[in-house]
Length: 436
Image (cartoon, rainbow, N blue to C red; front, side, top):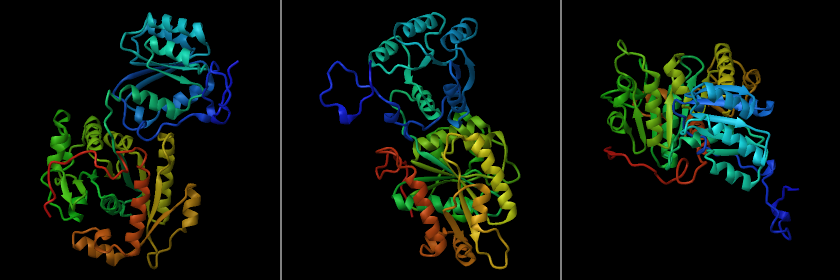
C-alpha cells in the first residue's frame, strides 16, 4: 500500500516505493498563477461530492472567472457524458471522479466520444499516482487535480488553460474607493501612486475613472489632450499605441490616464472596452492605481473585477461608517477568494468635529485599521495650489509619512513573482522620455 513520505524519511526507502504528495505538502498558487481573467467561455462542472462542489461553486463566482458562463451539476462523469451527448460541449469541462486506474481511463474514453476535439478537460481525482497522471494526460486531459481542492487551485487551473505558450507578465491593480464623497480617496490614490513610483524607482500608472469630476490632471498640474472617456468609444481601436498617446507623465515614474474634460457630454463606456483597456494597462505597467468614482454601473463592475487590492477610504463619522459597512458586506460577498478590502481612515483629528473612535469604527466593521491619516489642511492646501502632491511638497509631515507607509504596504503585496511585479527590473519600455 502506498504511503505518504516526507524528506526526513527518504533515506533507506526502497526505490520501487512511489513518493506521494500529501495534503500538507501542497503548494498554493502564487499571484502570477492567479493573475488575469478568462476569455468569454463556457464551463461545465460535474461533481460527485459536496466539498469539491462548494469549492467549485465559489471558484465560478470569482471575479477572475466572471467572463465565463458556468453550469454546475452533480453526477461526475456519468452526468458529464449525458450532458455532452445532448447539448453543445462547453469550452471547459471540470469533472470529479471517485474511480481510479482502469475505471477512470474507461470513463475518459467514454466522455471523449461525445466531446468536441477542442474541449479542455480538468479531472479532479482521488489518486495521486504519477503513472495514472501520465495516462490521463496522454488521453488529452488538460490538467489533473488531486482532491481535496480549494477555490484558488481551481481558478489557477482554469486561468492556466488560457495563458498561452508564453504568458504575459501582468501587473497588479490597486483600486481606491471612497465610502462617501469628500473623504479624500482621489487625493490618496494620486499620492500613493506617485509615492510607489518613487519608492520602487520604476513606472506606475494612475487611471482617473471619475469620468466627469476627475481631479488627477488638475491636482497634478497636467494638461490632458484626451481622457479616459474618449478612449472608450471604440473597442476595436484600443491598443497599447493609443494608450501611450493618451498617457501624461508626472515626474520620472508616474504615468497618468486623466478623466474626460467634457463634464456635460460623457457617454458611459462599454464594459468590454473597460475590461480591454485595463488588460492593456496591466500588460504595460507592473502597478496600476485606479481612482474609482461613487457609481454602480456595468462598466464600474468591469473595473472592480480587475482590481486585485481594494482600498476603501473613510472619515470617522456615522455616514462613513454606514457606507463602509455596506461596501464591506458587498465585497465580502462578491470577492470571496480575495483578501478583504483595506480600510484607511482619513481626515483624523478635525477640531470641533464629533467623530467615531478608531476602535469603535474597526469593531463595527470587524476589520483592522492600520492606516490613519491626520487632518493637515495647510499642507494639503499648499500642495494643491502648487499643483504638486503632498508627498512631493512636504515629504516629512505626518500625512506624507502615513501615505508613504500605505504605499509601501500595498507595494509589498505585489512582490510575488521574480523579475516582474515588485522587482527592481523593468519588464517593459515606454516610447517617450521624461522631459522635465
